[in-house]
Image (cartoon, rainbow, N blue to C red; front, side):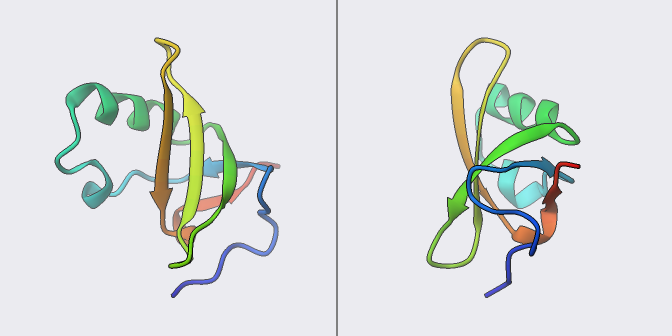
Length: 79
């Protein structure tokens, strides 16, 4: 299990640093594009699951809400 960034807490805005291929693999093209669009931009950190993954939530350009789970190493606090 990985540890979350010390400066990123649930409710904070964080930056998704990258969208790893295993996150995108098997997703519909629209979901892949929506995730790729938020890389490098502020996104809501909802919390952490039992495995230590960060749950992130965002709304895409079409108004659809997305929740993704990523390794804490792929986020940093929004400064």
